[in-house]
Image (cartoon, rainbow, N blue to C red; front, side):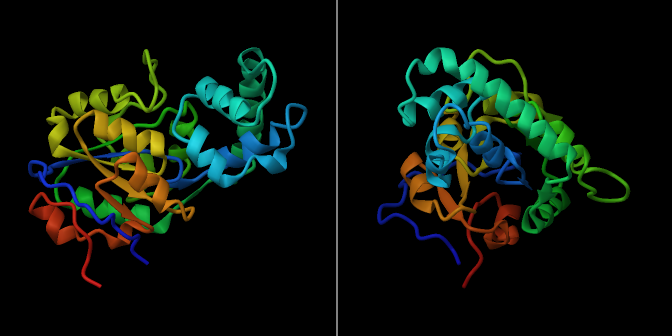
Length: 247
């Protein structure tokens, strides 16, 4: 089902698109990040209070320490600034255990969409705050013996940047390395922080609402929101427009 659009659409259409930038967790891959954050919370707060809605609103898309601090503050944990360092370390250890256990999978619609965009001859970048993104994508078969990571000409995942999302730095870096103007890039994101970062960078923000959180993505400023990347009209992309397939 196509996510509902807001009643007011943006009046100034962006320039023709010619490149794509993709977040990883939640857009390309079903990874155990949320699970790792929840399970690492034991000893700080009740893991049952770490809901998907809270993860999306406060943690998803942010650098590790920023996400840890935001989660603890949202849960009202005392001395969150100091505790966040330990929490972030626990989360990372648990995440690595889950990755090694084979819990990462690609979303089939994402693989189809990446292939379709690549077939247009568009340059593509991956841009995730996660330092684990490369490891996860290398484990996903893609095409002709390549991994999913090989599908992208630019990779800025896990780069050291002064600020993480919702700051636009990671997406502007991706556009610069693609040698494409930011206004000609769309960014596929599943987190409100990522949508805010794309908009702040002057890019078209495509929200991917896999967790029933379309309202959060619209509120963050998404230009389009879908529940599956199959909903994007590839023939419209060929003309530089991000539109939905007809119903």
